[in-house]
Image (cartoon, rainbow, N blue to C red; front, top):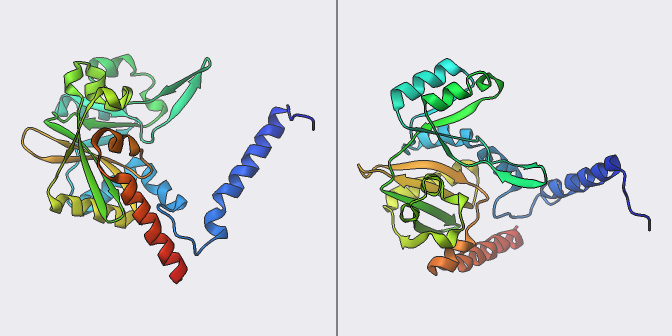
Length: 250
């Protein structure tokens, strides 16, 4: 069999295969999913999470999405220390190396440096919240797992701002708890999006306010079980078994 070497032919084969994979939800309408693929897509764009959080009374940091230099200047002048991050996580390949886009600080000096290019694309800015504690809250079916993640001890400003830039085992992971009333609001958010699973990033500030940062509708979680011993695999198995029973009942 001759190998396919034409770039357009390779692209065609890949896209046709992807189309079939993305059609499984429609081909098997009675199937039960941990998270339905097409229900994943809406919250994958984090702007769509903000109206739901507000509706449910979940606190979020002051936020601005714009490509206006003047609007950003005003926002930074009012809010002080701020961060900038992609509206949807995206990596890119450059000179044979893979790069990721993480949360970065932004100030008026940085804004001036990019003044002429701001108009080219919208940017997502939020007031930087002073972290008293940071949590990854994972909801798996009827079970929830609260993990406090301490990155401050690393003395690395990049890691302290966004712990995803380093290896998880370098961070302190502690099984913890949050008020059940707050957990229930996170469950309500999952219900709003029609999901059975979600990984939430939450920050507690010096005033004990819990700030919702984002919902990862397809977020990683197994590393937390490895580092804390919380029975997350068991919870995922139970969820899949429950969905399988619902399927057979249908």
